[in-house]
Image 1 (cartoon, rainbow, N blue to C red):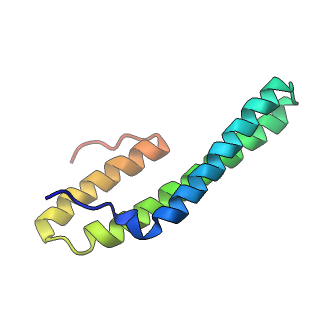
Image 2 (image 1 turned 120 degrees about the horizontal axis):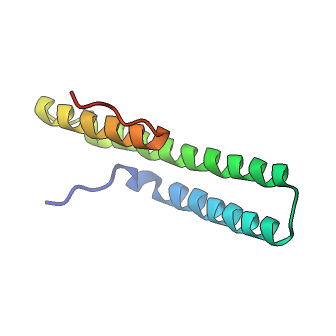
Length: 98
């Protein structure tokens, strides 16, 4: 049996946010084409990164609520390890194995 993603209830919201981010990235490409000032481009890159972090947080929260909370104790331990690894990759830190 395949597991259902925890974000299904928020799927439309996640998709809307991702489409908005996609538009922001296209805007960045236009800014480069237009040879805009470097700091303006960097500010927009920071905005895209923040938007991606917000989507990641939403998906993480949904995963914790739908997959981790109701799992058996053994499965919770495995899932917590997966979450720690995923968060580590998101923030650029690779946790040492336990």
